[in-house]
Image (cartoon, rainbow, N blue to C red):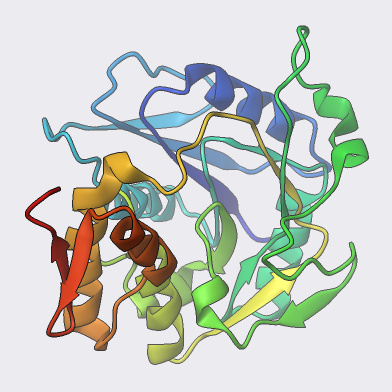
Length: 269
């Protein structure tokens, strides 16, 4: 049986992190190791996890570098299967077991699982033993039924909310590009890297996760500068701009403009 480690990066969201740990405890298979990378957050101290503290002092969180650091710690612990979970994600009962099985049987595939966005929790909190009753996966991604696996020929659909990868395949891909800091771009870049390094994408139906509710801003204006900076990094690496739907929304708001193929802030912004 392969050794499994979960990897979660966090800054704040302490309640969500505790809920995630509790959801993993209820799974049909327990990961042998749990790694949490605390980004500029010395208050994170989860007894069930190996906590790695990443101090940056920057206003922009180094999400890509934090995931790479978490993977490095997991590999040092002997992990053969890396399961990445966003701090907001609760693990469905078969998430770890089905990810481990899929990775063991097809180790050259980066596997993603369906994610359901939960409504705000009731006063007593989410019922972690009844998450499957809330199952309604995000409609913008494939959602095979439990027990099914399907290929994903569209690397742009990759997301880091929930995915699993074999240790050798992770090493071949080289992890996330650490030129990205702050919000946006690193997921799309990693999706491209997977195929560029000779691996594939797939979706596994049994590895279901449930995203705990929090307020969101759409479009994410407070991340505008990070999106422009990271979009330029992506354009330099791949020859096109990502996140174009947000960029066009920002343009409609008069915040950005496209000049000679390069997106930038407007003078009025």
